[in-house]
Image 1: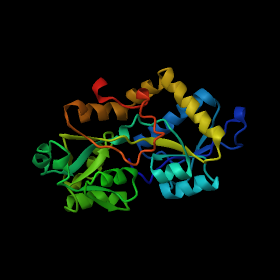
Image 2: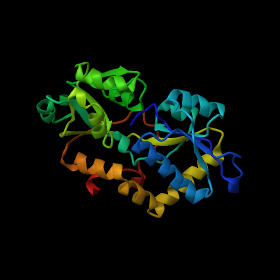
Image 3: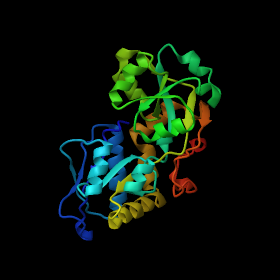
Length: 281
């Protein structure tokens, strides 16, 4: 999922007298972003029916988005959570993708499968170097677990860096790697078929810390969609999720679990209905 294409909104719901303009969001340039928008629309359909939506003319990156949230120029963004995000904004503490962002499989060089097939535990993995975006939330999780990480600011640099041997693998959410390998097919990369790295990591909707009304509308609508089954129906029937779960064969992989020392104590880890359970698939 491209971190620079985080989704933003300015919300309007006439029945709640929130704004006089429609909800403004980034252009939806991928299946992932389309799903995020569908989830937000589903939540607000339960708590704020009549909300209108309009695409932003240009995307903005996460750092700029947080500044715009702070300044009240945007109302909502989604992103993988970080301590800084949770300090400067108000998170809606329901994982947007059931914690799928913390289920990672690897893009590797095409001739490296034997090396990755030999990985059995965390000690084996620590002998190799991951490639990550410099400021991504999960970069800090890997580093906190003493996993070697090479970083770059630009997402698109990671693929030629991997091909050139600057690092050994690129951890991706399970819905991401096949499309990325196809889009970079000239580099001779492949999706590893052995390791599944799991750590608690949520993507949240974030709002301005002072916008309690909007925060509560999203939260209550999301809770309602989970309770009536409409969220699971949307999530598990989405073509991107269905394909990802079929291709990734999660239950057949070597699972390596990491703690997330950066996780806020308020993270709802005990709400099992919020998180993906691979044993139930």
